[in-house]
Image (cartoon, rainbow, N blue to C red; front, side, top):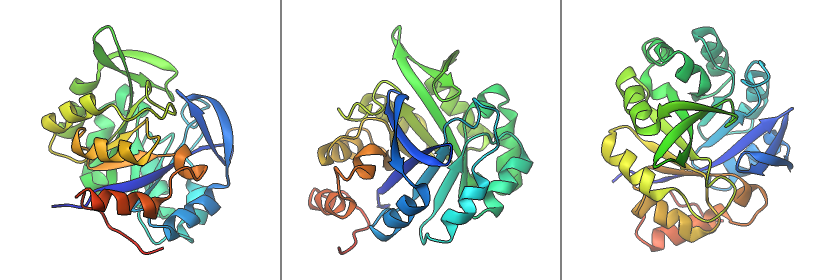
Length: 254
């Protein structure tokens, strides 16, 4: 059985790591290079760096920052934010990233998923999806959760898989930063629908939530931000807890 992954996420705005609740009310969480280095040394399996304003403010990705980050890491990391073209993706991967995440650009022009998968391989392409539950269904949102669409979540992730996406990073905007647990029902449905790995995001508040997301949500990886940034949950302790509950994880000694 494949090990489950624990992935700290660093949302970046103006070169700093930030964290909010339901995508708003952002507060500073530290220097992303220093945080990334610390997580790499403390047992994280991967890292995700998302420039949360790159698309909204029409800026390029954090490729320059990725070069600094790569010097301090010995684990894989994903970069996202403002990637729209093969050229953007090439810049990110050349900066040292192991994978690239696309979100709004893929919704606006789904063909970019095919282009990136064909150009670099599906294993490099992570489709990030932000969604909310309303009117009895899950709906996709764009531009860091600022813009609603009429696209249904499960239709979109299925299409993305068919186009060549290698992984789905699903964030429930309703759960983001609230710390009451992941959107396990939606994650379980997504897991049954897809054959590619799913990273769960939004809602982690304590160790038990990670156990639930792997058992009930059937996720392949769990991503969290504030509980790691503000040292509410320690990754080695979390992994020991999961291992004690028969979840296959890569454990590290403190």
